[in-house]
Length: 437
Image (cartoon, rainbow, N blue to C red; front, side, top):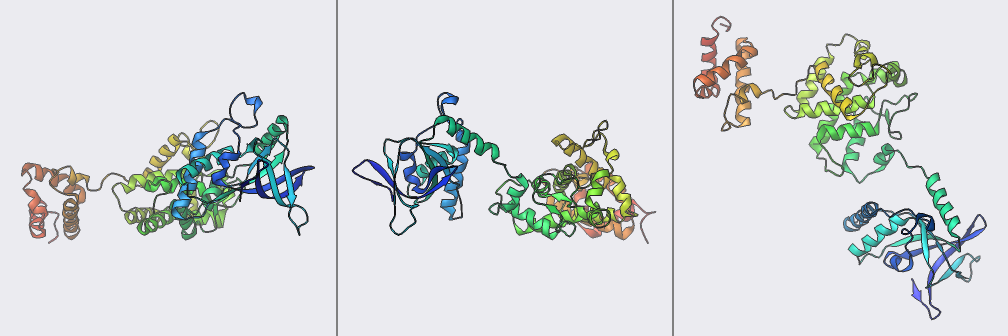
């Protein structure tokens, strides 16, 4: 625990170590004491400090991360802050140790300036302001007496040697977001994707035999269902997601691609597993879900798949040259993955698989006023389809004639649509030559 002594020092339990011949000290500091002992080093001329300009947005994100973990009692972690003490310190080794564990005394008039961790420290300040009862601690790694030039060099070394992980693996490892959990569930539950999703790269490497990247699958699933990070995912949506992705995987013969052709070979000639196509699937399905149930969409995809003579025929459909001007540049052959290319590819997918995102009930909905509910419309169409099947009538003819009957009768014909007996009698009179005996 930090105490003030008569010699005007702060004292901390610490561990002493060495790197590159310099002594360093590791200590745990109560977060609510941090503001008292750290000096700001992010203002003034850039060459007179060893930190970048402070980004308040980044610090607020860290504050929100900490307060969220505190309030929900969920695990969180914050990395070590690294800095320098500008005055000499006193280290008293504890008895019974080898000399590198003890108490570190830091003069109260010393400046401790960070060269790594300023946004974390800013986030901690906000956290303590918001949750003053928090009793958390933070690790500090401190050097002593470094000149400005060395501190600047260390700042450069730390940031130049750091490699930000791919978004894909960050998403895959993030177990706090229900959307990430949904995509992991899809990746393990869809047979064609099991053990064939790249969790490590945002874009699947050309020579990899993995089919799609976790990031592309994640982005497409969010588009498909209009999800945002952190949204709750009900069980029904999880089921729909697996149903739809299974149907698309079958329609594009992804399992055949992986087992018989090889994903790396396939990518050299076709774009059926490319990120732009995965995202296009998400967009196309989102348009379909506006007016169609997930199972109905899946059934349409399965029916279309049965029309394929061979898997090779379908793979030909996705050859690069067949998508020129849509999501492949005709001049360079480069696959485009921007939003416009994804939208064009989505529209082409709908046409390719005979999917119509329009409301299937629109023909009757537009003939009725707002007093007629969507549920009532669906029930009447169900009766019409049943009579059409019984009497071997063309639905196209019925869709053309029924709105005319509603308009001419000023809506009274709706009573006929609501009663099977009346509807059957009308059909018999309207189509005497077509109706079965």
